[in-house]
Length: 87
Image: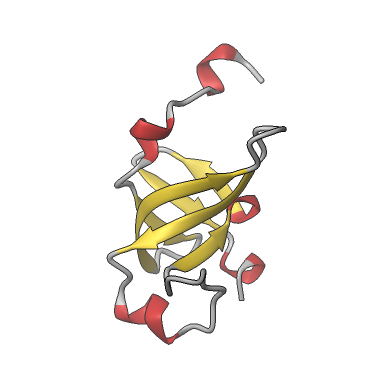
């Protein structure tokens, strides 16, 4: 990974999450990762949109919507996810 590809988690928190087709899901609330390896596992969705709420996505025990970090395809002004990877 190139040095300029690295980002701090605090730079990502609050970013709007959208699909490739432009559908809004909400904002990135937090990131769940494996402490031993540092592997990013899930993103916790905050302020979910009505579109995101009607999808049958994985939830944690507190009821937060989880999006697999593997679904992320781009990070810029928005976090772009592959919707087909989460449904």
